[in-house]
Length: 330
Ligand code: NAI
Image (tube, rainbow, N blue to C red; front, side, top):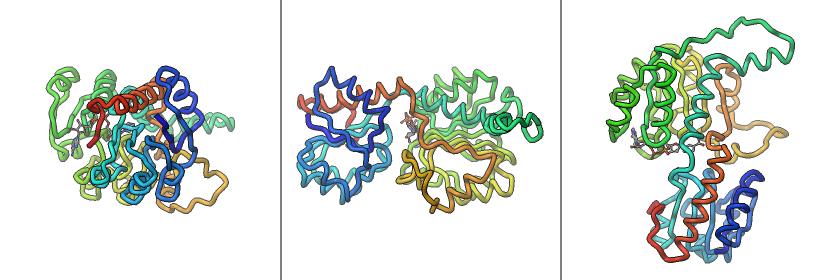
């Protein structure tokens, strides 16, 4: 099937091309993101494959439809960037990759936590300059600390299990409880308020939707323990970033690991090193030595890339064969 793949990077083009040897779709890679202004590039492509920060608002979808697109094959798990009502009204099918490697994301969350706690990001820079001082590098044992895992789906489960391996006490929160996970990790399902007030570390693994937008807001920070480490590999807007900055300044938050940021669209995945930063909130976040920002790279492992490509291509083939779409989001 003729497929326009938007917002592509060299590392994924190679993987898509290799996986496609078994599928034989006609793939065209566009480096630019998909939005209303670029949607005309997809004219004549029955399938469009957007990435996680592409804009799939009603206006973009209408342009795609007018150009002959019938299938939106997301190469992401999250679909908060798609106007699903508009897609439905326009008769567009939307499929996604519900799972590609929960390990990739959970392990990245752990990497951020270990870095922030043991300050290896600061040590790395110091040692390169011949500074072997240990001042300011004191961390704490993870063993025995309380970890709050909010969202215990595929990624949250792996994260909770890894943290249990460190000897942490696990608190879990989800709208659906997983008894096996609680048993396996010795964890306990509890309220958000309990997690906020007792956890030394909080990690977010839930989707962005109306009910979870700014889940971590001023009132949530007010309840947290002083010095809490907050990790977000979920979606940026789960956290009210301005409230986070306030609580970094007053010391309530001891450190924050952010793989996602509420205004990341148009910033992440691109090299802006030669430009003036215009996002003052992001610029302020970047000044804290106890904030670690990565540009939405938690998914970025070989295994995840292969799974994303294989599932996306299989989703397209299933659509072409007229089968019921098991990865449909509509
Ligand atoms: P999943 O669907 O397996 O798990 C999400 C869990 O969140 C579910 O158990 C669900 O019941 C729970 N949940 C939903 N609403 C909730 C609420 N209001 N309160 C508490 N729990 C709630 O999804 P998965 O694969 O574990 O991914 C989680 C999120 O991670 C995705 O939605 C996506 O936003 C993000 N993600 C980030 C990546 C990155 O590279 N940074 C890569 C992949 C996913």
